[in-house]
Amino acid sequence: MQRPTPAVPLTCLALLSACLWLAGGCASQPPTAQLLQTGTTQGTTSGASTQGTTSTCTGACTPYIYLAPWSVGLKPGASATFSSIVYNYNPADHTYNVDDHIVTWTIKEGPGGGTITDTGVYTAPLTEGVYHVTATSKANSALSQTATIAVTATEFTVSDSTSILRWGHTASLLPSGQVFIAGGEDDDYGFADPAELYDPAIDTFHSAGQVSRIQHTATVLANGDVLLAGGYGLLAGAYAPMGTADLLKAGGGMIQPTGSMNTPRSSHTATLLLDGRVLLAGGSPDGAKPTQTAELYDPASGKFTPAGDMTTPRSGHSATLLPNGRVLIVGGAAAKAELYDPATHSFLPVPGVSVNRCLASATLLADGRVLIAGGSDCSKTYLDTAEIYDPATGQSTPTGKLVAAQGYHTATLLRDGRVLLVGGSVENLSQFYDPATGSFTFGPHLMNPRFGHTATLLPDGSLLIAGGSESGHAEFYK
Image 1: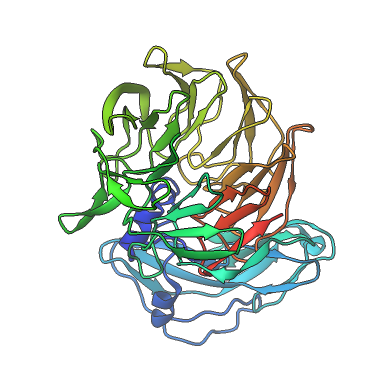
Image 2 (image 1 turned 180 degrees about the vertical axis):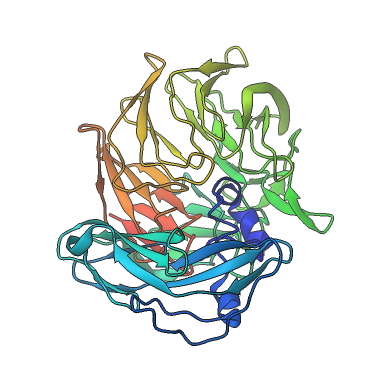
């Protein structure tokens, strides 16, 4: 799956967080087809000429290098082919002009990290591990991109059934054991409708109504209804964050409107509280600036009411319900965390969380602590750090480093107490966190790259990975 680009505006809406916070995301990764119409490329270490036309960019142009795939999972000894294009991006007319496009290939780990030919064909070593291939512009040695390779003998299992291609969607485990997969963007840059119900008993997907939302939230209520709130939709013929909300009714499967939020939101959080209400916090009301407002949805009345303001604006953050009923809110271009206390309807600063993160994961562990892992620095760099927040002390402490920097991933608490991080910025890679040892180890690799996907723990303990790929097949970790 290609990264979002300015030439495809709706893709940037669907993966808004990555576009906003990682400058190497939207602007630097153009659609391959568009580039190949301008010029073609073949990586080489010899400096041999490549076939195809080149053109010169006029005006204020910025050089970039495109590398595909960004990440790949391989069995020991297996091979994959990488491609790279060096180009100039002109923001005035969103054109990509190929020039001086010869690259050299290197492996960061040296001979122990495998081999790569002058045409970009990489062969993995026989030793499991995480390795890196770098493409460097021959004309400008400061211009390079690096891909991550996870070499593991184990793989995810691919489902035999197919689903609608989608990313930026939600997936909700229903009381019936089925999974409601809703909204997102399809491969034609439109809404990924209809929604689908996945039935694990027979491994099938079937239609479940129109949702027409991207980057919304989905919350399973105490009565089994699913609250779908906010996200991007069509307003007056243009894509914009919405303030509307719908309910998927339990049992009957009908989708119907409920009350509207006080503030339009996308990239916000929605957290089911112990009293059955839902806290919706932050996000972006205009697609650009984050908000610090919050509100509560009451299923009894179907209405949203203001819940005060967070201590700082946030978008692309996390919100985790703690065993004591409070909600830990972390990240989203804010250096400090905060707690929402439903007893006092107030937000309280938490100085103990040390790292500013966007696109990170926050996972409630079996012992009530919270693993905060990866993400980005809300600028250009993905993070390989993690920390543990302890509600008993109100402080967080560093824990082991990730085997590879990872953001915009999913993180799921498994039945054995470990946490499995999947996909995102390293699209084929997964890694385990073990609370008993405080360490990360690489996990099975995905068969398809995933970015903007969902992960749902099924009643039998297996993990369903859906969407976020150019393949319509789901994958499982069992």
